[in-house]
Image (cartoon, rainbow, N blue to C red; front, side, top):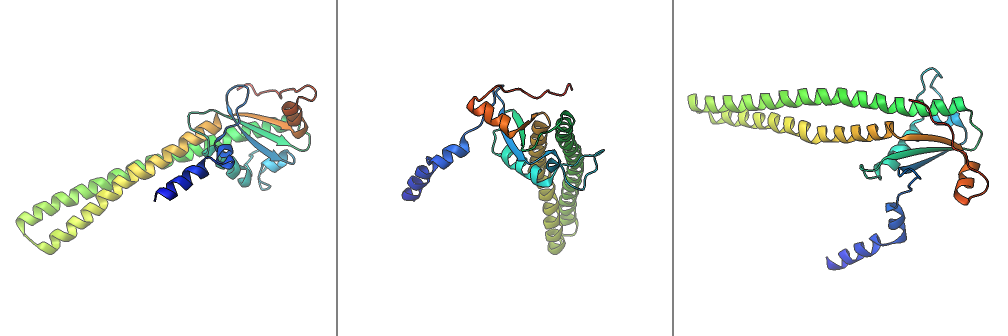
Length: 213
């Protein structure tokens, strides 16, 4: 047991673990999530029409995976790097689509939270009602079989309701916080050559213009 602890402690100090725990901070103090794509269209699903942009599921999964490892107390900056040049209109599309996608996720989560609360309360109410009836019938009829069945079913409803409201609801709230953080993230769209200029100091580096929202 002690050998395992020593081994785990040693492995936690490995360069790979230190790198995994390290965060890439931008100049404004936000933690950066870097996304690399070939051109702006790769950021969207090919089935999406331009009047209603849907994000590429692979891009969404990658962003969510990166965000999950960042402490919730940190603010996020989403830096999208493209191989091909992007116009200001394409940059605006990407920024607005990121915010819209996560805003829609929050709407979905809020709906689930309401249903979760209603189902949880209803299940708890049924469970308590069955337990009260069980106590009443036990005093009146003293039927062991009926008493056992009502007690088991009542506790099942009660525990199911508590699990819905405590466990499932806490997970939904966690997802809501993550979506809120990504919705409020600063989104930058740049070319790879600009990234190299910034990192190695070759030439001047210009920030792309932010949307006024």
